[in-house]
Length: 357
Ligand code: ATP
Image 1 (cartoon, rainbow, N blue to C red):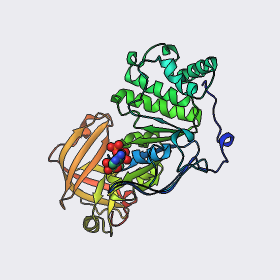
Image 2 (tube, rainbow, N blue to C red):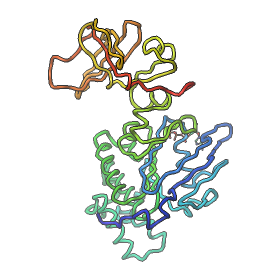
Image 3 (spheres, rainbow, N blue to C red):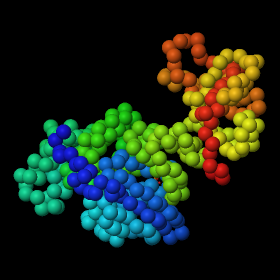
Image 4 (tube, helix red, strand yellow):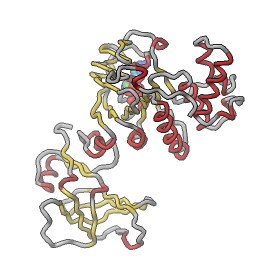
């Protein structure tokens, strides 16, 4: 750990959020990109904005950075209203998906550039840039040009260039989007460690639900410019507020109101995660327990996932379900297409969804 760690108390009153958005709205002509966004992001939080393409998350990021002007509402950083401030007047830094490195400069000069703009002396610039490179484990590559680096290394230079300025808030716009899966997973771990070490507030934009679930302290799920749900990864996954969130974050079994009534005996829409379903071979004639739902089904398809199986089922009532079974090491547990099975799940695992979603 080479850069100084920020304790929240050094930089702001303990309870002042790093970012406060109130009634934030942005329109482009007829398009409402962001609508009625109210959000507090705590100092030192790893916060993700998750949503499909066009849901407005990048626009929110650009409104925080000052690259866009709000049509209505306010942006506060550490309690100060910056709604009308220029980007350079805001204590935030953005890491873009394409990294935006200067190709003609060495890696060290790329990292030191922001310090030059701030008027630091050459020796100090070099020292601090070198420290930032060491933080992202690239201390030995300062003399290279960006073109002589791998994708993951370029991504780390972009991070070093941001953290050398020690901003209070780091905005990251799909920063891992250009990396292959293995590198992406490695960088996810590194990003999380870096954020913990530096104590900087991270605001992370992604359309990758797994990435958001893995990295974040809290997630805002966006749709059509609005926040559909705000919560910890566990809250969002275990208790999705709507069919939209349940469907977007992970695979789920959705029961519309009519099916819920018929199969579960309850009113309104419901969801059950595939890993909550338990399968046993054959049809079960015992009376089901009061705390569980039991259904007869036939296996439509079994997909081998390495870590387990994804089993597609159709119940005797004609409802399609998906079950996830962890691999137990036994070769005999795999269900085959056409097999009759009994599906069980606990009533406690049935999540009611908000009506009209
Ligand atoms: P992506 O994941 O594809 O980046 P996003 O969720 O970040 O999507 P935004 O880029 O915030 O979504 O866009 C929200 C909406 O605003 C979209 O309908 C988009 O077409 C529109 N939009 C964004 N920027 C502009 C612009 N400069 N001019 C006109 N429309 C825009």
